[in-house]
Length: 349
Image 1 (tube, rainbow, N blue to C red):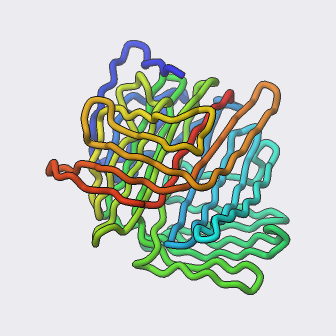
Image 2 (image 1 turned 180 degrees about the vertical axis):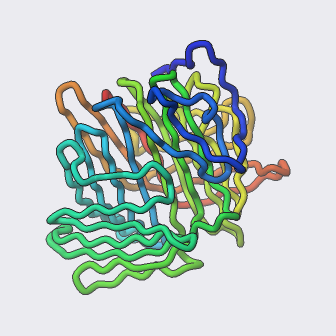
């Protein structure tokens, strides 16, 4: 998909002031052009109204330690809501997933701001996210998760000094998206599956958040990759995307090193075999050597939805990254066998 620039505006990568808040939309429910750009902390109020059956809202938390990955996604697309819970046993290379489809997203209420609270109460699942004292406290109870009872309790640190990537992508005045990409967040907590306890200890576990609110074009395609890791005595994370930002003048590309974000203004490309996603991927910046990574997947999860005029084909791969990235001091950082994810998504929605 080639994205379309906003009529009469030529947006370039710009850093927004962190000393003020921004409304994503104006009084006509169109994009407020003053909100376009990126910041190191989330400052946007995603006050999207109207646009019935066009709104896209999601929160995706990823929680990782050396041998286990847990993630939970809440999605509200107006016409449907999705609640997805996923556990990957990395050593055994086994995965369990439960996805609940909710017609018209009833009860999947997602707030306008990154650190607002969330409550989802259904017969089969109870989820709360309480943001207090610079922590996101996630409590989950799922009655039937692979014929087991699942409980999850996590506390994710949101230190204001820890920089994140927050960016508005403008396809047009009517089509736009705000995203907050947060890597390398300290986390502690546990999963309880029946009587089995899986501990995630702070210092050995990291979380990431992908927060999105917007009005997408009907035809959408993207590639995305992300990882968060403690590597050679420092925390390193990455967020890279391609396809959906094309032609907008902005990117969602950044490196996290400890508490700092290094913004990557140039586009990246994902080179891979579309007929066999389990082969190696090459991910690199187009005009420089700032990013040069090889991704080797070992497991795949897929979700295909087909509602006649609404279709999506989502494929997420887990595996290991190796290669080089360059920090703000132009020093090369060797990456060797860091666990992370790559994604391909095609949708008519």
